[in-house]
Length: 421
Ligand code: ATP
Ligand code: MG
Image (tube, rainbow, N blue to C red; front, side):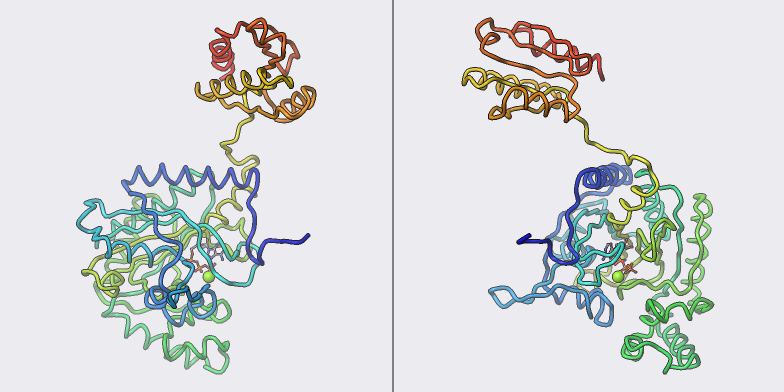
């Protein structure tokens, strides 16, 4: 083989591709229900945007970003996540004035150069949303319910929801001090190299470390009064919504912009990469990027992992794909081909799935293909049919055919279709 796909990148084929489409369609419908508007943002941004938002000491920025220089000597990055771009677009396009709802969703590819393994790809797809301008914990509750709604409506049953509160600017310095003390007590020398390096700049990152994070399971953060009571309100709100969750004090998320509420949704069906959705509140980000002070909360669902769960748990994931109802064949004569192609278009125009037009093949091969595709009816047009202004309509299952007049052909096919659907 001369060419292979680039390491960490993959082709998504057949039923998998259909399941991706099904999930995207489902998500769109659910977002509409919660009054979110779609936003489409570029795949690339200035790399500085991600440095500023995601944070210098995070895995993404330190190791995973695809960064390159364009011909104008700009430093560009393939987007590793969606929030930074949406916030940039929100400020740049003055969306706070243009959209009263302030709720946006996106669906698209993200890129991270991490070690390829199960559940981790270098190009992957996320369904995400950002809800601006609502400080209330009820916005957080809505967002968590919305994420669960998308997962459940896609066909996923047993997910686990973990929540935490990372505190506001007021409690952050105290929390950091708290964590630093615990780390020092735990013995700094035992930490992995990444944690040693990040410790002084951002001790929070140690909690998120894949190696050292586990050591902080029992850690109880001290929040300011406001954050504590908001956290209680969040927990009560989730309980009232009949949502099961656990509190995980070591959940800090791999991006620096979060404040207060953070959450993660996991599934046991997935292997060690068990998170299928992650999100939280980021009340400082819009201001940090030059906008007005704006509350914000959002999440991102990893679609590749969502599809993996469906493929492992649902015997045949709901699929949009259907066999063509009609397959149109013609013999070699030019007039036959023209007529057949015209009929094929007419059938499609009447909303029926149809295939055909493989006129370089023999009639026998065309029929074989119709059969392989699982077609219900074949339309056959040969010299005789042209001459008599007729077509042959063949029921592929019972292997019987009849002649019908050209004039009433589409009506007859529609009748067959209505009987079958
Ligand atoms: P992880 O801890 O698994 O590295 P993360 O904290 O980097 O996740 P986020 O940036 O919050 O993940 O992204 C949200 C979701 O996107 C994840 O929960 C996951 O489902 C999905 N995701 C993240 N990275 C990848 C990847 N490389 N391949 C496939 N899906 C991914
Ligand atoms: Mg990661």
